[in-house]
Length: 152
DNA sequence: GCCAACGTTGGC
DNA sequence: GCCAACGTTGGC
Image 1 (cartoon, rainbow, N blue to C red):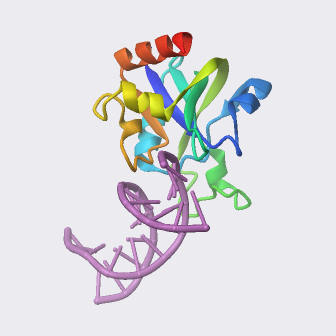
Image 2: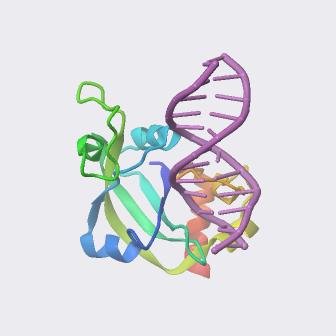
């Protein structure tokens, strides 16, 4: 079982929304590196849920992968903001996964804390200017994040 | 709201 | 294939 981190702007989709809706399709990813990581996700992998683009960005909870490597249908929808006119049904560009809500941390782990606890090599998230919205998390880093979620 | 960092686009 | 211009992300 592997760990990932996915970013979401809480104004758009928050951990509370996730909890309420129980499941969500992680569509709209339009970055090749992030797409490739989405494709590598396996059933039962877990994803740390990160709130970005707010005053105190933080890891706020966890989701679990319940469907892998699905076609992202929004790429074919001209009315979607994620519409990609260059993608074809024969050769779809963009993939997605389905996630199930697992937990919201009682104490979220802020970016400030993450920067104190982890190096850029351990956790690319803490690198200045990093914009990757889907990334793998090393096992030992995941274990320490889970500890932090209990300790704080 | 600013702007650094980065990815993408398109002219050449 | 290079790279300037542009658009977006996201921390601050």
